[in-house]
Every structure is written in structure tokens, then in C-alpha cells.
Length: 205
Image (cartoon, rainbow, N blue to C red; front, side, top):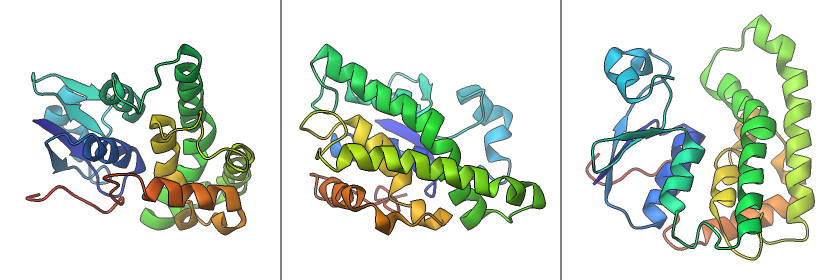
């Protein structure tokens, strides 16, 4: 059985949780609070020296950190990871885009707005982060205005990767309602087999 060191509000942890469920894997979650120092304990740092969630404990006892690395590991050999070499590269391209051009703005503003008290230092950066977040959403909208999925004609880990924080971008003050292509994509993701919402947890936890 897999064990996911998780935070239920984290979009990065949700990526792993969603794919584990859609692949039908048996797994349990261990809730970890990143705001109270729980990821900085020696015990947690032994699993992930970076001190972040998610961390996936594999059945052999090893640990894998970084949400997008976990997606690639789990998707290998499945329909979520394309067989075509160029398509795989395109999936990775979107996943790199998420980490460098999307998550640092969309996810960070969600965290500041919903979970933290906005400090003067944060407020001074808010306009810049919002502009860059909208720039990322504009790029996604352009792709999804003519394509059902981010890569090819099927649902892949590129979609899971970017859905995680995009579908809760309104919690960071982004006006997602203006993006009709993204909104239609949300509905397609939600109708995929074994979809679970970000608030879902495995039974027994």
C-alpha cells in the first residue's frame, strides 16, 4: 500500500491524491500541517529533506517527493502518460510551465489570501503576482479554447497537474469566470472516471 503524506488544502498534494484514486491504488494518507512546523521535524525531513508535502511512501519503504515527480512515477505505463515521445515531452513542458509560470503566482496568492494574514511585504508583491498569474491563465485559455486537453486528445497528468491549482484560483482572487475554455475543461476533468474533489480523503482517515 502507498502512504501519502498529505495536506488536504494543498493543490500539490491533491495532484497525487487524485491520480492515486483514478489509478485505483490502495493508499492511506497522513495529514501534515505545513503551517505549524510539522514538515520541519527530523522525522519528516528524513522522508523529504526539502520539508514539503506531498511525499509518497512506496510499498518498498522508499519515499518520493515533489508532486510532479510523483505524477510521472505513478503514471508510467498507464494511459495518463502518452506512449508517443513528442506527446510525453509536451506533457513535461506543461508540467514545467506549471511549476515556473503558474504555481508561483496562482497558488501563492491563494495561500496568502485564504490561509495566511497578508503582510505589508506580501501586499507589495500582490499586483505583480496577480499579473503573472493572469498571464499563465491566458496561456492555458489559448490552448483550451481549441483543444479539449492540454496535450493531444486525451486526459493526461498535464491536465491533473494544472487543474489542481487552477480550479481553486478564485480562492486567490482570480476571476476565473472570464475563461470559458478553462471552465469547459474543468467540467471535462470532473467527469473523468474516479474523479475526486480536492476535499476528498480516503475512507478510514
